[in-house]
Structure formats: structure tokens, C-alpha cells
Image (cartoon, rainbow, N blue to C red; front, side, top):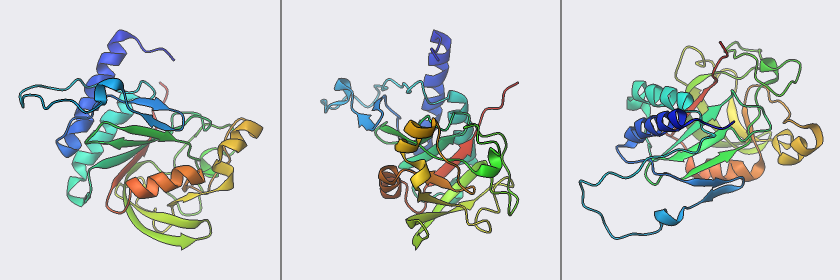
Length: 232
């Protein structure tokens, strides 16, 4: 989808709001499918006067409405967030074959994006699109809202991370054993074969390569936000 000039301006404003999470600018970044490539104008430069304001841009694949919601949620739960250098945002509006798990570095502006599966209870017909959220135990659906990343542990899928839901829409996350883990059905090869990822039981299931980066950068005490933009 091509963004209009007005949408790009709004996207920049939304990203500027997100930068306030850690009181540092979220600078522009160019994204490759496998990660981040720094722009030439982000190479080391002589220090600028303190009054100078950096340009703020955003990769157009990050919906500014999701960014704005994430920033508002971050503000509501700020007292429970221990580490603010990186935040995670999951845009479940997107099809499961799109990288929709974003890691945003609030200090440097670096952004990486990753594939992530949604719950089978959120997409019973396996269309590739999340149809609904649920917080009910046994629903096998994804839940929307704010999370704090918890401890690492070893489980069915190897080294994984627990999450704790902070909102009424996801406060059963621990009781439901919702975690961040890797899974075979979240690998890019599944998209090549089926046109979409497989489904989890409500967990954030990532490709193994992506999970290693997420665990390294979005460890315990960090903020994770999941949502989607509903059609009108």
C-alpha cells in the first residue's frame, strides 16, 4: 500500500510520540527483510548543537495508529516497565505472511521486523488473518493489549520467554501459559509452502532466528504491545 504525503507526515508524528517513551529520539531506519540496514546519514557524525532537532521518520509498514496506541499503553503502564531501550509491537492487522512483530530501539531508531503466528482460536478457518482476540482460558486465541516480558525458561519449544498481561484483555496470559517461543510452523519455509504461517495456541510463535534476536533485545522487564486496527 502506498502512503499519501499526509499519511507519511502522520506516521512521522506518531513515531515522534513513541520516542518519548525513553525521552530519546526515534531516528529513521531503512529495513531489509532480514533485519536492519543503517542509512548513510545515520553514520557517525560530529556532535550537533543541543538545540538541533533530529529528523523523525518511520518505516511505512509500521501503521502509525498502532504506534500511537502502543505509546499510550506504554504511558499507562510506565511504572511497571523496567527497561525502555527497546519495545516490541505486534500488528495483528497484517496477514501472517507479513513480518508484523516489530522491535523498536528507542535510542537509535533501529527497527527490525519478524514473522509471528497468531492463535488458532483467533483464526478458526486458517485464513491467515486474525479474526478475533480472546482472553479466555482454553480459547487458544491471541490476546491484545500490553505485556511485560518475564523470565527465560526451557519448555516444549526450547528456550522461551514468559509474558505477563497488564490489561483486562490479556490478564489471563500467565494462567493460559502464553509465552514467546519458536516453532516449526512459524518459519519462512511454511509461508513458501502454504502461503501463510501456521497457528499457535495463543502464544507469540516466531522463527528460530528471530527468537534469538527478540530474546537478546527484548528481555525481562521490557514492554510488548499487541493490537490490530479493526475495519469500519
